[in-house]
Image 1 (cartoon, rainbow, N blue to C red):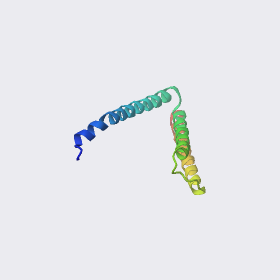
Image 2: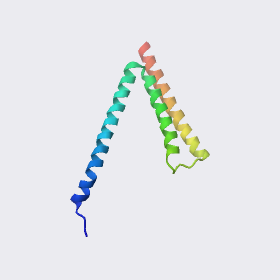
Image 3: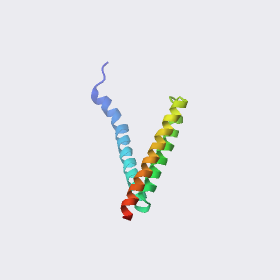
Image 4: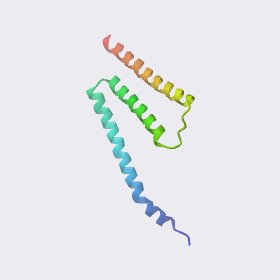
Length: 102
């Protein structure tokens, strides 16, 4: 017996709509939080908080799913990525502070 496409789409409509609404709410929450953080703190603090979030998400993602294999090169790559992000944030903050003082 062949199932019609309309029945399959109807069965998936509610979970897909719920996922879409939750995704939009989370996106708006993150954007609003970033805006509030930047308004209250310096931009360097917002950048540091973003880098810290990325570090935490990388560590949680590595251990939360079963497909992560620990190796020295994997750790070196993740470490270099984190150091590069922090270095870029620091250099950007120094550039902004130099333009503000002069």
